[in-house]
Image (cartoon, rainbow, N blue to C red; front, side):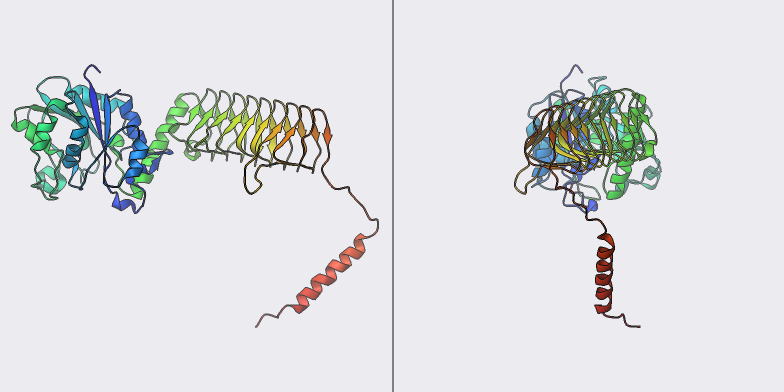
Length: 461
């Protein structure tokens, strides 16, 4: 875009209908706070600056949007008042100013680009507004157009006449404004309406009175789904999941049962990946080419990332947690949990294992029930298993510990000291068998159970 662009994100709403201590715009859709979706959409326009308007004490929002500056709207006096609060941060900015809402996670860059382009079609255009045909226009401001199809004014539902309420071409709230005129227009806003607030939409009437043009850009209603309640949040999540699933399949991913696969906005897949049913991807997950995910798996890379190498097989019922790196061609099987561990190419851990805080060399085999004992009650410690090593079933490796290349840790062992390369390690008690003693043991146990039953109080009838 030739002219510079600034963006004002309105995020000061208290969100009382959410019934939450979490600010509304920080509730998550697609694994990310709603306002992060909005910031990602506007960032693609390469704006010169982004200012986020917050309410008093909303430090959590300020931290979430950093390094973008915030402006504080000291009182909740409407959208026009919120934009006024952003003017000092904009300074003498003379480009275009795009106003968006932080609780609109489904907004797309394409729609934002179109409304900015519409504002720039002529010097006489003071502002452009994104609108849509609403299935239920009740909660929205109505567009009042002149015979030329340009915008004369926007009337809020509470202030509309009976005939105006029948209109279904409505305001999304997204507006691109000539920055050179914004301050002067905003100063003329008045609160003479049903809510006693300063409506940003009144800029249209003020601009028209000054003989400036205002135009409308039509968009898709699905993009402008705001979130004001938990029910709205669930609806936005469903719409986001449908969008993310479609994008994944269009990019070459097979979702065996798409409606049961849950993705995050930052989930990344290679080509020819197959994802089985009932699989969940939290933020921070990257899946390589040709990976086969068997289903009922949980991937969570938040804070440390999860990376699965090309051709690996994961699941079913596997859990990969932050800091996990799975090498190419590795097999992570049912009920295996991996956390903060690096597993080399071709590693196999096919059953019932916990691999926390470890490094496993290429081609090593981790048996069923094996555990990396990584926590001693005070600190987390690392286990290192060399390439080609074999760790038998139900072995416990008590970290910090190293198992050398090609070593064999026998089944059932508890290993507390380093194992040299190519060594065999035993860490279990010697088996002892006592022939003919089983009948006497059974009799003893049976008698003890009978005595306990006789001593217990009888239930009242």
